[in-house]
Image 1 (cartoon, one colour):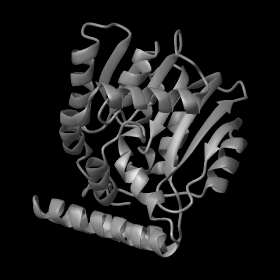
Image 2: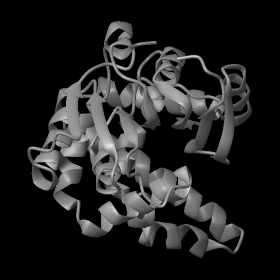
Image 3: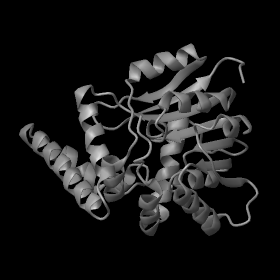
Image 4: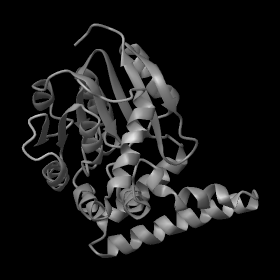
Length: 273
């Protein structure tokens, strides 16, 4: 997997912080509560692998968790640190560091956590299964692992791999123009499909209420999607079977039907740590 042409996620997240508001943070909190099954995270330890903008580290901390955030991208680390500065300055229960999900020594030096969270990250590392193994290694017995990974759509996924590869070969700002053209074209084709099915509001309603999707921004997510590289993918069934073989049972899962990520929360049932 080519990692030299890696997408600069941190620059995109830095722009996202300019539109972050209380409503988006609340939506992020709601999405965590709904998937994890807790009303709050008080007295829980929470590891955010690939913290990105820092939004979900912030959400977990506001819900009461003791949070440890790290990211490979220095600007993503800066974004997470900025949210900590804004909302939890001088807080000893939220640590922010730079680190790699693929660095065995770094990962092995971390504690074990009640909740290990990695949303849309490990498929961008260039070695997804190594990242998954490292995430598994940090989960306590009876702890939870919340993963979101891209769906394997066969040839379509390989086509998107090429789209993303081209984005990261283009110079700035041409890559942004390319990203928005591809992104809006994809959304237009989706809208066209649902219009033929006489269900256009299925798509339009999602777009108009996009901030309810984990508090995210449609334009920033568009660039993240088109540019996100390295890019790997997996079927829901493959990931479920793999996690079962590693001593985890699935508590809640949302299978991606086409584009997008499977969202899966697993509970560690074995005693291996």
